[in-house]
Length: 494
Image (cartoon, rainbow, N blue to C red; front, side, top):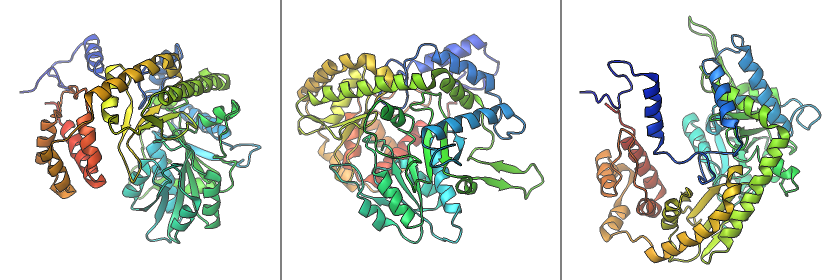
């Protein structure tokens, strides 16, 4: 028997007003996307009227198909305008050191990184077993690209103090089979900019492409530099940088999901394309992974950039910079907490030096006070940390954060650290990825209060025990646990 309440295909159609009411009711359980209290996943400029503008632009082009630019030249014009704006901002275009820079609009940063790896791989067809060199702090999307494209991944460790790779280690990792070297501006986890100029130089010396993952910071760092901040070289002004990715749905504050992948010249971009005519239908030519693409996100991004303009982005960058400084000062004022890195861009990342101050409990306590932060598990000698992605909308709330952080820390100390039971610790020590059957993970999840609700019910508000368990198991077990758990969540609603 189908539960009509949750069926996407009821026997009889439902009135439009009721459908929208149902969607709003489902949204009530989500994290807040506005208001400056969510430090991950969304990017809020706090600009009045921007949502209404982008919704209208999105709707105007929602059914426009990006598959064929000759059928919908409006979309081609907007894509070219977005690529041109990104290229100019990142050291490309007429009069720059990369006057022939070209690019493509993708559906997000992960797609941009996959395509950067694809272009580098396909440019070297003579290499049977291509390899990719990435700092350990490089975004997980590089690992996804390597997995999808069958490219071997060579991770370079980062210094636990600087959180950057040593250039000598990057150079040592380059082999004859290396097709791409990547670096971050900045890294997502910690918000530090890799030594791009030096890494690009060793890549160029080896005759290898160098991609700068500026998905996270590429639309913030140029404005911060204009404000006088000491932003190191990272874009096409750096010799040896062959491609750059920048997400417009991050600090350009466009709706999800729009990213731009830039190449220094058309020849570098050419292997990114896929063309196929060996069938009786239309000849397929795709610059990106998707074929059919809605024009909605692209129109939303175009409207955002046109509306905000350079002066608007400079103003938003100033607000964000001031918010970062305020949050960093609040962290520095609390005994037992320390910044994992001095903020260089739009991230505040901190850890705890006090064994009695459990960061995972602190994350829960901050959530109780309306602050939604992102816990990061320990990794390869780096301690667990709390990540704050800071946007312009945070600026008016900074004064509230310090007292709430102090209160959350006091409550965390009073609660004490999470102590896993001896039985759970024994189980965690014995787990292997192969042993993690769906049934075992379902039982473990149920014991932790994570049964999952196919109708979209809320997860437990407090996740410290879960994060503690994930933190003590090996990385491979951690991955498998989460894969199986997400599989539990993603079940049909009958």
